[in-house]
Image (cartoon, one colour):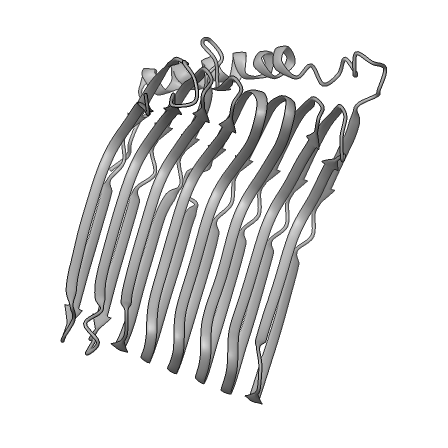
Length: 422
């Protein structure tokens, strides 16, 4: 069935397209230069060809640890200073494909066996201490992104895999100053992240984290004034998929956390005014890609716990703060189907806990303020529209266990403004 976008969503997009840059100019004014005379840092990057990294580690017997790490990024940019003011304007465009693959195979690893695979289209970061931070970032990814981790072992003391694939990622950090940021992110390709593992015996814990995202922004601040905004979009017909498949005969514990998101923005501040978006210049997130998170874990004999978790979300915006006024202004539009699937199969003769969690959300907006450390107010508005199918499924097959917990949650739109403390 063909879905036609409604005037509400188009109005939100037009509003943000028109007013988003105004927010960036007013908050960051990156072209004006530093008031003390320091010129802004300007970074302009274009990558057209494909990039790939691959590492294969094969072991017989290792007395300590073994690891395999693969990292690929089309463009990377950083504007960092130990202290003082800094202003950074970054433009990144990636037209090729970005792939990273890490493989660890063999017989026995007495210590920890670790794989890390990371693939980014564009990545930008900026930060300072005891100064003002002003950033304006424009990122465009038109190719596909793929990250994959493979583990096949007879035995190991512990096993872990971290697999991350993201189209565009940006991060800022500041303490004791202003943290003013505006970003535009367009992820126009597909993104895939996979963690695959087969192990006979793990003495300790086996843990797996798999993350796929179209556009991701994170910001942290302490005793800082944070005023930030963004336009984040993904493309129709593309897929953003995260998959974890684990098979272990025996383990002390086993867990897999699998996350897939279209657009995500997180602002965490402490003791300073924090605003994600502003009235009339809201954060805009538009997800048109299909989003899917799948976590399948088999641990035939596990000890303390066995966990399989899958989380899929079209658009996510969150701001948290301690002791100072906080605001969230966001417009979210989701047209891509969102799915989450989590499965766990196994048994625990030691009386361990088996848990499955499957969560799928079209749009979520969260503003949290702790007022224990001082009087403060929480304000804002959100407009959410979802025209997609949202599905969450889960299953547990247990032979023996101390307790079993299973949950599946599907939500179209969720908005939460909450204060805590007194």
